[in-house]
Length: 125
Figure (spheres, rainbow, N blue to C red):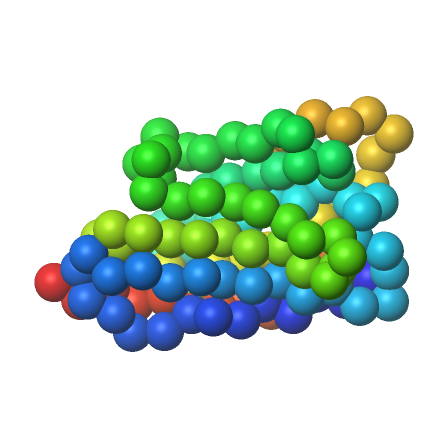
């Protein structure tokens, strides 16, 4: 499966963005999905994760209440809605998916087998 992340951009503090992750060459419903980010000089970190059936989600503490992860398997696309953006949200955002017989949220990057190319999100103060 190939992943194409899009929707990043340059915004101001308090603005919103919706990132999309379009899958091709595979059926997204078979995969759990995660969103990661990497800021300059920092390690890649998990932002959010969603189970295959969409019933389970995870958010890192810094984005709880501001970000919402979702998926539309009919469109083979996952989303990360980001509201009330802050300068500390500035990073390259990556979507990733993985396969497993067990459907629960995954937090480690090593759990994910397929990665998108990343989309830059820059939040100015």
